[in-house]
Length: 117
Image 1 (cartoon, rainbow, N blue to C red):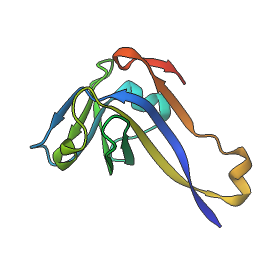
Image 2: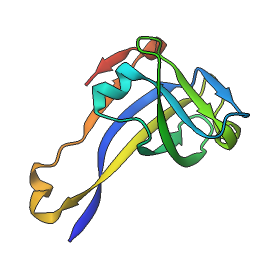
Image 3: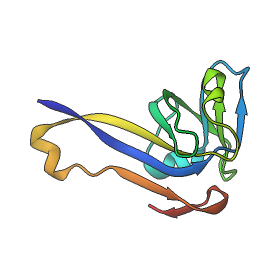
Image 4: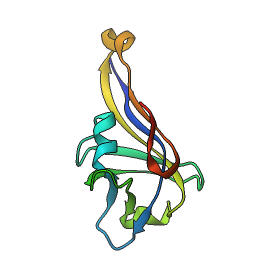
């Protein structure tokens, strides 16, 4: 049996901008994506800590070392600048591998700086 498991998470990143007119997605600083192994166009779940909205989309790589987290398209109605969100990517893990499975977790601090990996 394959179980859907957390593979990577950026915890408490602050939304820096939103763009309602963009086609869709979430733009994240390339360094933050690399820190947890997320790749461009990967499907993610986004959970708004402050507003309560939850949605799925895909990641677009933003400029490195900028701390950017831009919610694009219709999802811009669900998260606005200043909101803290959790961005999660998932994977299928065979039950025989569950014991060794460890997700990559990036904890964010003030100014969208990495606090801990």
